Image 1 (cartoon, rainbow, N blue to C red):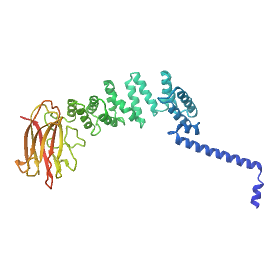
Image 2: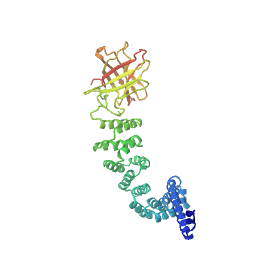
Image 3: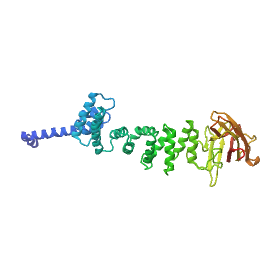
Image 4: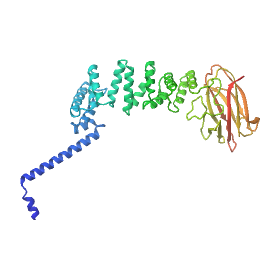
Length: 410
C-alpha cells in the first residue's frame, strides 16, 4: 500500500515526461521497422518500399531506375527525374539515381548533358552497370573501339550479370577486324572474365571463322586456352560446311598431322576432350570402349555384351578422292568368324565406302589390312571401328593397339 501511495504522489509533470518518452520510443521503433521492411522490399516492390521510407536515398534511387526503363513514357520519366534528385538530396552517393538522370537526358537527345551526368556517375562508382552500358554505347557512337572495350572490361569485372548481357554482343562484334584485333589484345592481358568469354565464344560465337581467328591468334601469342575449348569449335566449323577451315585450325593445334592419313596410329594422345579429328570412343547401351595409355603407346580396349553391336571408335577424315589402305593389329580378339569387328569408312551422307574385317588375333599374328576407295563428292568421311551383334554368351572383347588409314603406295 505504501508503494502504491508513493506512485500516486508522483507529480503530474513527471508522468507527462514519461509518456512523451514512451511515444518517442514507439515512434523510433516504428520507424526502424518501417525502414527495415522497406529495405527488404526495395528489389521486388520499390513503390511499396518508397512509401514506407521516402527519405531513404537508396530506395528512391531504385524506384527512379525502375521508372526510367526503356518502355517509360514522358510522365514516368519526369517522375523518375524527381525521385532521382530527391534521392541525391538524401544520399549524394546514390549512383543509380545519377544514372537515371543521365539516361533520361540521353532519351531526350541531350547528349551533352548525359555525358556530364555520366562523368559524375563514373566518379562516384565504376560498378554501376547502367553507367557502363551507356559508356559503351557512347564510345561506339564515337567509333572509339578502345574506349568501348575498356568499358566492357570494367563492366565484366564489376558486375555479376554483365556477362549475360555483354558476351553475346561482344561475340557478334568480332566480325569487325578492328574490334577483333583490339579484343585479342585485351584478352592477352588475361582479364578475370577472359577464359569464360573464350569458352562462350567457342560454343556460341555466331561467326565461326572469326571465332577461329581469335582463338588461333591467342594461342599463337602464347595464351593457354581453357582446356577443351578448341575441340568445341571444330565440330561447329564442320557443321557449318567449313571443312578446310576446320582442318586448318586442327593442324594449328596438332603440329605435323597429315590430311591424307588418319592420326595417332598407336593411340598415344591423352586428351580430356578430343576433337572430331581425334579418336573418339563411343560408349552406348552397355558397349564399353576405352583408350588406355602406356608409357610409349596405348591401345583400345573393347567390351561388347551379347546381341549388341554398333560403332565403337570414330575419327573424322578429310581425305582427297583416291585409293587408301587400312592396316592394323589386334590383341585378344577371339571368335569363330573373322568379322565380328571391322573397320569402315563412310561419307558424310552415310554411304559406306567399304569394310576391312578384324580377324581373330590368333590368325595372321593379329594383323589385318585392306583397301578402300574414296570417290569424288565425299569431302568428309568417318573412319570407324564397328562390332557386329553376336549371340555368344561372353559377348565380344579385344584390343586394338595399332591402326592406320593411309594412301595406297605410301
